[in-house]
Length: 203
Length: 432
Ligand SMILES: Cc1cc2nc3c(=O)[nH]c(=O)nc-3n(C[C@H](O)[C@H](O)[C@H](O)COP(=O)(O)O)c2cc1C
Ligand code: SF4
Ligand code: FES
Image 1 (cartoon, protein in one colour):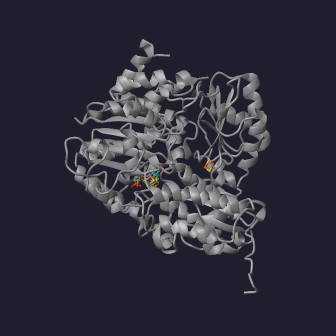
Image 2 (spheres, helix red, strand yellow):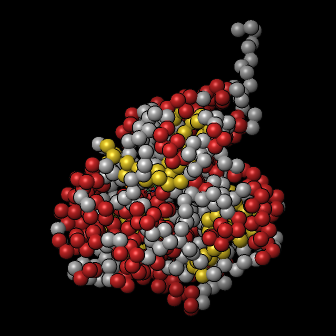
Image 3 (tube, chains in turn yellow, brown):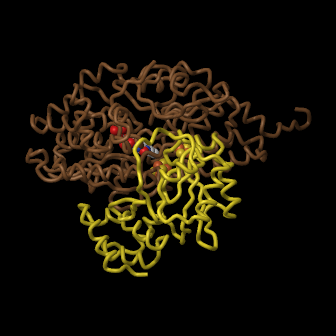
């Protein structure tokens, strides 16, 4: 779908932040990710017009980074860390459980578009290994049984806004550090929740 | 042994609201920024940082004052804060972003003033959405107070700060890749020379790139003095440092200490020992790129130079502990896979080499190894980093390729028998 005037205005505000238009490319790709769950062809066209680079240039950047999805993602993107601290703290069993629950292999999306599952590299939660992200909101100390509960919860309750602190309370365990500050913010799409992009939401 | 709280003091004392500007100010916050803008002597600030002898906390340990000193003259200059923190084992910038964003912003104000910069970017990895929101809230609070924007602190100076979200690419931690990424390009490291972004950086303009922890240290140095800072720690590794401890310890976490104690002491005191009282088989002293030390090397001192002399690096300050039951082939494979996945693909030895290393380790780990595999692994490593020396020789544009070699040389150097035990025995032909 092409972009409506509201989205284009948001894009223009973002472009204004930078000395050169092209710097806004990353944030604008997140707008597409939010809207469609992936970087769709129409968005590539819109972005190339807004920034003044070719569509191929937009694609070339989009395909470089793992957080821009080239195919539609499910409502919940489950990313499980498999890097060293998680690997030696049993992340493989977390991965196996999630795969079994969802029936998905790495980088697959289910037919109902509920889940996309991916194995990822370190997400900076190594003290809270094994660590998982749901739509880029971090949950730490996720044991294999808790991972199953997390999946069940998402599937059955279908929460609109994903908030890290909320999931941590319900399904997390040991943390990298005391989070201390109460937080209600999160995201309702597979784009990371961030004010500037316009993707952050309060619960 | 105790922590020395400089950077983590405010967040410890005000756990629930350290992120709010009023609370930060009540605790002497923004006094360093006020002071330097009032004194109006940028040269003094740079001198103070030089005196402190602080070395960059992003991994390379480059002296910060020196870096600031050779920022080239130009009308347009930039400050870029490297908050891409993606080195496996590392989560120390995350706590600074999440729990004390104003300390970072104050550091940015002082740094920008010292270097006559009026536009700064904070490049935060995309997976740190929550820390990024915290920082963005703090930036907005600072704008409201007039600490950012036009005529900050009524000094006549302007400073704009933009928080920019990355999109999942470890290589964007490498400073020139980060700049390309911030310019809306693929995050591929740039060819050197020019060696320093301080000469040609963002949009080809002189640019300071510094780590979150480095810049968060600046307010303390200004409030106290470079001399006081230099008194902490040991020569060559002054000040405090936040170490991220993870792996098989009872109490993982971030701990701020003066550099100079031994790894053994650190792991015992703060990690509260190893889970189930097991012994340490190996540990990584400075993030996934760093060669490992063995359980017999726990008395090495935690300083940049001691670790370098012992054949590894303090790097990003991430200590990962592996107990006696760890399958080190799988551990090495995890690290090699990381680099294979994160290679930007520009250099053949890195792109192809890391993929081969991953495949060979995979077949060894799953019992399909070949007798020749150890030689093959080392041969591929030698193509990425000739001579397998430390610090590594490079055939590549950036150090990511050679980083993938570290776990393999560690494995073969100290744990070769463990690998050999997984391989078929050599077949003797004609009773040779
Ligand atoms: C592959 C690679 C990844 C890096 N990742 C980071 C990183 O995540 N954060 C960081 O601050 N520095 C990282 N660095 C180091 C930066 O290139 C740069 O030296 C640093 O940001 C400079 O800041 P400092 O002087 O304050 O340490 C990385 C370097 C390489 C080669
Ligand atoms: S060494 Fe690897 S990551 Fe670095 S520039 Fe070359 S291909 Fe890219
Ligand atoms: S190793 Fe899993 S979060 Fe860092």
